[in-house]
Length: 164
Image 1: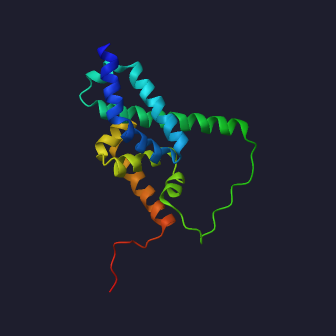
Image 2 (image 1 turned 120 degrees about the horizontal axis):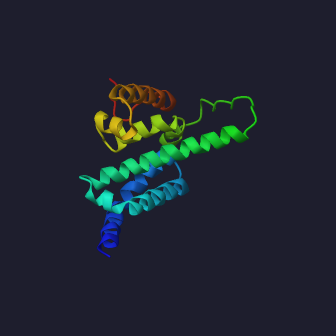
Image 3 (image 1 turned 180 degrees about the horizontal axis):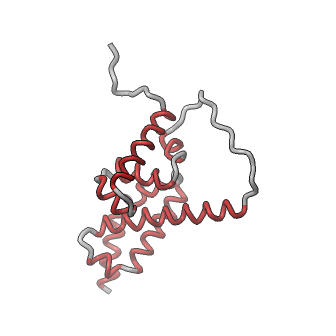
């Protein structure tokens, strides 16, 4: 019974943070709820191992991110298998204002995960590389390219800059 209680306390304490991260990864409420619940279910299934970890919150974030990436790969594979070849979609009109979530949605899932983990979760390059099982140079280059792409989509004007 103490195992269930320990998990319940952990889930209550971390559910909101996991949800916020999931929302930034998914970009929609329902997807974030599903991802959070799937993550919590996986954590519960392996709770003795999770609770023995040095940093259960980091373990949970790793499960969340890897679940998101696996889900995206699965969806892409299904989409490609069942979609006839067609012309590429028309680019959005440049006069439209692009929100941050829409801009994030334009990034590939792995790059999006890197940006969210690196800049929203404020993880180090080393942590993100370990979490996503890639090299530190991959994280640096992907984040650099992704930020350049986001700047391009959102424009270069900054709310905090002062012009003389």
